[in-house]
Length: 271
Length: 316
Image 1 (cartoon, chains in turn red, purple):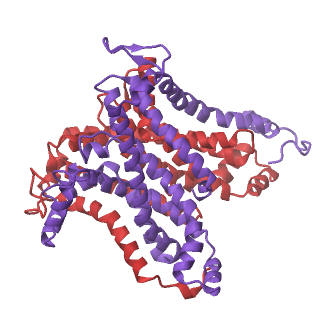
Image 2 (tube, helix red, strand yellow):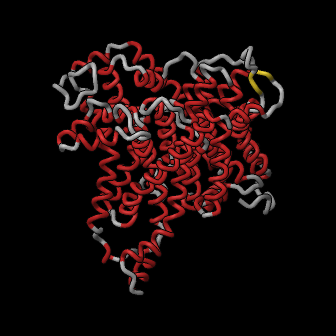
Image 3 (tube, chains in turn red, green):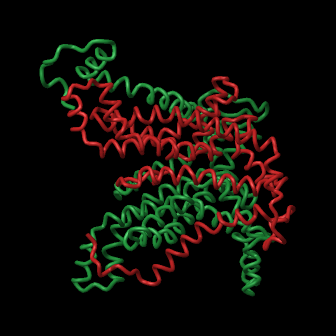
């Protein structure tokens, strides 16, 4: 317990914390203003005027839609694979003790601990050594690999809180292993899995570093944005897409937060 | 689950599911094996296999005349890393990573401190989401936002002009190493964006470390006559240090490996990530690219070893 005497923070600390939070949020808010600017050739501030016409222009762009479609498909498939692999791994690591447990948790975390460019170029050179042509599935190989850790982290945290005696009680009452899984384990870890899945989806949807190495000529939405960043051609459309991406990624994060907020380990605290 | 302790009292179950369930109960190792095989196969083959292939290629070399890869074991490619042009890239990247790490620690500490010790109830949730949303919002969008902010015609130049401080900005930009034509093509810009993008990775471990400090330690310190400043220096800060080190693992490693931020906001002088990208792409020199990626891995290996000795992993 903390004492009540220290409820109020020193003024300097309040200012520093508030300034830090503003530093984190103002740039993102700025995106929302730029999506409506009338200026199309430069990043001029203040905007000369506001308009909603770019929303319609962006809506009618087939390249944006196909990039978005590919991103959603990749994220969905990678999340599905990651949820199966991550849950299996978490169940094995948290429910039993065995030789090499630490090594396995290290192995799962490695793809996200090492810089993304290493994962990317490693996969790229492996594809070229094995003469695998770039396809939808080469993107999936990369994405699922680093999505596993997000699901794993969430599931492990929940397994740790789930008491083993619940499972024993279920067995004592005559349930077989599958019934125990279906009626006892799954309801207990369900929200954590869902949260992990949403975070994995957000991670994959946004990934660009590994994707540039594994996509070949295909364009996911982040790759589309990267090309616009390197060689700006349609700034207003990019502004609108940026705004939409911010909105789309916020939803799964908020959902994951609400699904796990009552626990001691809230989802998303490690990316 | 205690394995095989009591004799089986019930008759065995009927059906395939029942039989399987019984087998798994009698042989937990089999279940464990079945559970671990898919993830380990995936990570082992896809990930470790690729990493190994990469490492292998760093010992190959490229033929200077034909441009073909010579598949014979050699350390020549690693030797090339020491050429001034390449070595500069490594020094530049490591310096940037160190600066970014220091700056993020300074900016992150008050936020983590406030969130851990003073924020309650609604404020706690607000702080949590306030750190989480920037952490998870799109990496490219964040960089794009800074491209808008740092552009010559952007909001920062405008703000400096409004405050009649344009001379200060111009003076800074005319400095030799950190300056440039505008902030978006200078090392200062690269630095700001790095700090911005990795900041949440520093805040979270600091907050976690501070939350584990019991309140009565702080009270004991002030009961014994320490001023708030002394309490901070002698009690809180040493206990928060593992958190800072844990956060610095992320900021350091992420800066070492990033190639997109310096490409979009920065000068034409390369960082390790860009060198890797250029070598494997346009130059087609996969061995040198592979050797370049070994540099951050080795640096991070040393760093992690040092961090482990400081107890940083308990704060992750």
